[in-house]
Length: 248
Length: 105
Image (cartoon, rainbow over all chains, first blue to last red; front, top):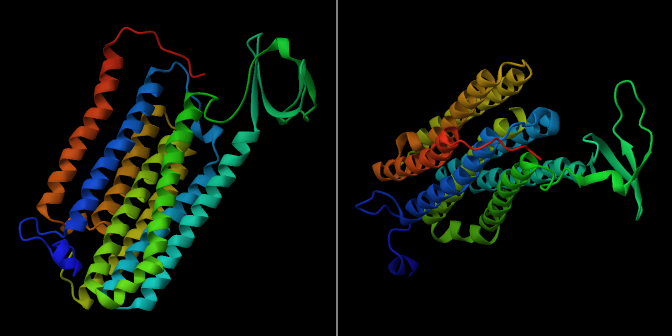
């Protein structure tokens, strides 16, 4: 019935040689290239135009980001294996691989939250004398803050009372800290939203959507291929984000 | 990627595993190179070259671009042209404008 309403959803269109779904997902991915392209362009523009730029590997957690790279690449493999299992009519393996893809996507988000959380509780205070201190806010009062600077190799952290009148700016390492952190949170946040989108789609295909396997196997395999194309694109974006933000 | 026999898919699976190992090795190389403290130009060049190889592997083998239809190549070439314009025109503009550099904060 549905094949009569929307044509070429399980068989290739004679003109394009593609199912409509597959052409649709590629057009969507082309628009996604422009979305991330605009943000990468902003990154380059701000970096080139800035007189100073922090070293990503000193500001961000490289081991956690490397772990996330490994997790995402592995999830890309499990996703393509899920599609291969569909092609080989092995529903049990399909479920196993797609389930692993969803699980790895959750692992990525958990690792990401471990990366974000310390940034939001770590502060930098810019003083009016031109100096700045990094550490944690111990106490906040109307006239002053008690600040615990980060420990250094030769100095144990000692609480320091700083008068509000001496403070030019007090900020955590969130998006408002600097252009670098603004770009870091925008790019990684948008990427994380894409991961959430992928989880929703893959969970649908894993549970309620999997009913189509029994009725329209070819069409279902096409859906898995489209979901896979989206997921590999999300992986591809991370492959470029990782060195750009964390290592350079 | 529409008409495949079980043997074809089995061969593909072997390729996926090989690509996976290559991607892991390239990730390791990216991180190791970042600790060598090269000059900024060399670091950018190497990091983006490795990322491009990794991206190409994902696109060619996981996304099956290596055996895709011509229409998809056309869509992607168009997207690549606009992407390049988006990337290089603003940079070209800043290089040729006489504006003072701004701070990071």
